[in-house]
Image 1 (cartoon, rainbow, N blue to C red):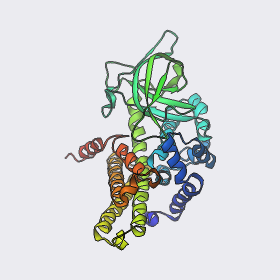
Image 2: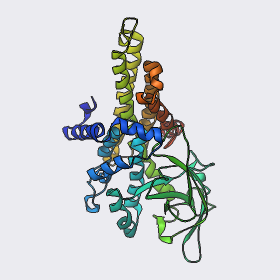
Image 3: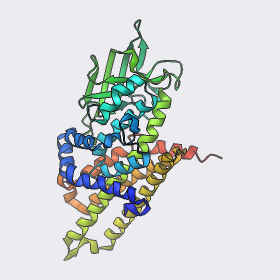
Image 4: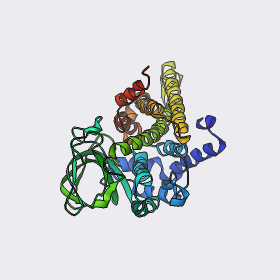
Length: 381
């Protein structure tokens, strides 16, 4: 079904990732990580050994030289058993790509190869208590001291994956208090930096990858931790979000397809009133609507990824894919809960996990309302 609009090579790549998820990761492993709030270190290492963390990097940097379409197909496969698992792999890549694009030669040498080999991870810290959708209102302050080091003070929120081991955080900070967008910069801060306090939050979703709050009180960071130039933080984050939104939309679609497929299977197996519940037209129509939405979401994702891979402006198309993919996942997971009935509430049914993660999908990486704002802005005469 997914391969109808893909080349043979692309279809084979997607099937490879799906088979890997079935045999090497498994839904049982993803479920256990969620239930116990454990970061999926073992699966992360398996993916690193496949070389997939280097998919988007140039061959000269030790990568595979793939493009965003290749990466989005991988994201679709990785999202098969839940978006949270996919996030553990995708989130580090977004920051690693920022380093490949904006980093100094020293930063690239220090970080890229170890990331591709799975020895370090990355996280990105954008939001704060007063800066969510309005990310440019960041108040966490970074100033230079007399030695040229950075002194950082503030509080960050919803930093996914920051509490795992060997993580470097790309943190959006304010270096100029008088310029809302031009006064933002990015610092690369290891999560074991003295004075950095990271608390993993007991959230509804994101159990395995984890999301955190971070406190900084006069934390000293080396002067060479600046990514790009001072004042380029907003530019870096905007490009980061476009890559992120396209990839996560692919993962949403992969998880939505699993939710529908699982509900269809259950409807064929579950009997009530002397026949499979699939025989009741109301359920068939509910699931037909879901499958139609998944196929439409997938096409929106593929269009956005193809445009980005071709170097075309695609902010509108990326926002459409992210908006529709996340809302489709939520609708399909909720429908799956209804079809599975009481069984859906058990962890081993997985549907309640898909539903929890779907709620976060319409918020993280830019809310559905923000995506609609971006789309509407592109519609001005």
